Image (cartoon, rainbow, N blue to C red; front, side, top):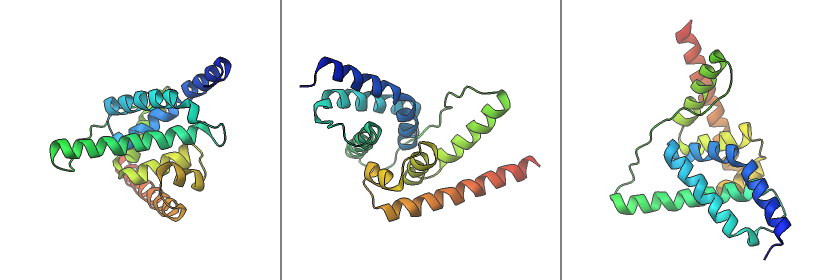
Length: 171
């Protein structure tokens, strides 16, 4: 069992990860309600299993991997319940505090990222937004580093094409 002070630090660090964790959950679920549920479940599990956290590496990576695994389990449960792999995703605006013009642009970019397949969106978010290394991203998502590089390249090209198309439409 962890000492009370150490547990308090663990919970504080976990709370500081909530905005990042929610963004990550949105790339997985594509639905604000599911993302919130996933974040809550991941936090509950992280606290319940905090004794397993050895303090090595980044807490963020450990919690991201846990979140991803919980989502994979949830998808499997849904497939069993519905009898199909089809999932309904609803895009929800992310809360962005910025000027109106910047908020509109950021919202468009976020929707573009979320419109990419889950594997591409998650890799893009973890590397380009959250600043994880390729190795860390591979560990979080449980995929080889080469797959991270390939998906990241594809995601960047898709996003560039979508941004270019969007700019051309406005011109």
